Image (tube, rainbow, N blue to C red; front, top):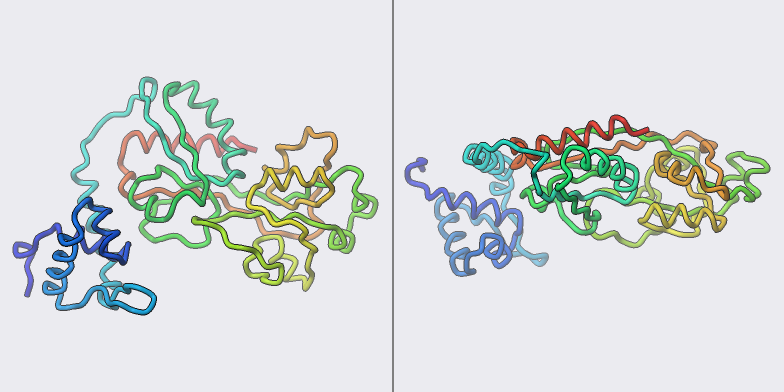
Length: 312
């Protein structure tokens, strides 16, 4: 029977990175050690656990059932140790020059960041923001604390992440004021129009869209599918401002209301409630357990949440 006194605890760090990367070379790079050193660590882990840990398949290295079963508990243990050894520091917002890194869709950035910047100018004038897109980072980046916050709509999240709902948003249609749809605003006429689709959730590089794949089209088309109806999508985009600009060119843009209101002063566009029911969108911010007790991060999370609460 193995006891804690007999175990090199560095092996737990090795195991954690190996299970995430599933590649000895990448795991070694993550820990800034040589590949032979990581290979030796994997060999020692196999002996310690009497399990292969990673096995080679036609699709690359895959964890064994036992290794996968250990992963969540292992992360919990390592997070606890990380939190325990972090130095306790006060955060002085007024004098801090910290850079907070945020992953946000352009919808979240456009609707939230202007007011957030006003608050930062008042309370922390030297704090900077580094805003990245969902395609720039991965869950691993958030999990490892390389990104302070990720703000978006998420389908699924690792249980280890902390999260807070910032708001729920209804949907609106952005339509050119001379569009014939406005002469008889109904579901049937809505479906006859040409539409621009926009969405970007979660993380990673997007993939090509297929109008026939309703399950991947998201909120608007899922709601229509429940009515056994479909719209004609002329353009697919992952950028909300592109969608809103194309509304000026005659396409119908159905998007979150807070985004549509960014163009409420554009005298070429009309904002209308959709002619059918669409479930509300939930905007959530998530962060790593490694940052949960960081004083500066606590302050920043509170500022973001308070700003979102005042956003209408």
